[in-house]
Image (cartoon, rainbow, N blue to C red; front, side):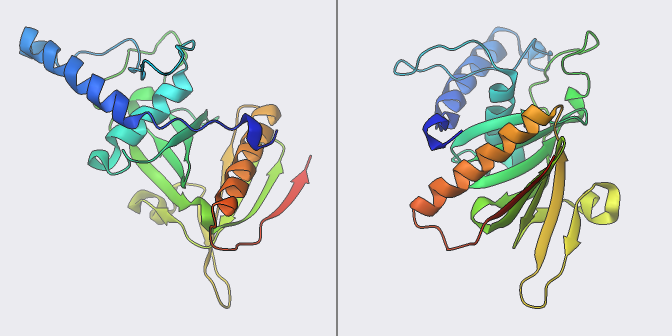
Amino acid sequence: MGTAGLVARPMASILEATGRTAQSIRNRSNPHESNRLRVRFSRPVARDRPLFPYSWEEAVGVSLLLQADCGRLKDETFVVCKILREPAKFLVLSEKLLLLVSSRYLVDLGSPQFAGVPPDPQWAIETEMNLKSIVHLDRAQEVVNIVGSNGETSPRDKRGRSRDIALSSAFIPLFHFSVELPSIEDAEGTLQFLMALIEKGKARRWDKNILHRSNIC
């Protein structure tokens, strides 16, 4: 897969406007129903964009960018979201950022026990890394390993409750973490997406970082 298959969709502003309008109508109709669970996340609809089949991954990624940290990421351009093997965890990629996120309300997503989507999924950003800081990528079976020159974790992660670990260098502190995908195919696809995004960023004159890749099958 090359950059030809990589489509970035700046949809946050569209979904934000339609979501606010719909929520306002619902609240005026019955203010006591605003906390009801929904069957699924809203998805962006625009006149100039074809209506594709509903995608949970896309809906999760756009919701995260809109709602996490009080909308701090709403201007990011969504690219792709990957459901990870660990329940309720997702890898979200924008044109500039890599985000490892979770929501306790989505633990049963995809199972008959899934109750629905709350108005506020209470997104937790466990790791945030600028794509231009990534200096190494590799894959070992279903696991994608990522090393960057910076990375931020939540306090929960810093207490050692996640797989994220900090590495040190004599000159530049390095940050390493791994994500486990449901299958080898998903892991390889994620690796290819990351590499394509980084190459696209370099073409836009990112800082010159050396990207190394090694695959362990």
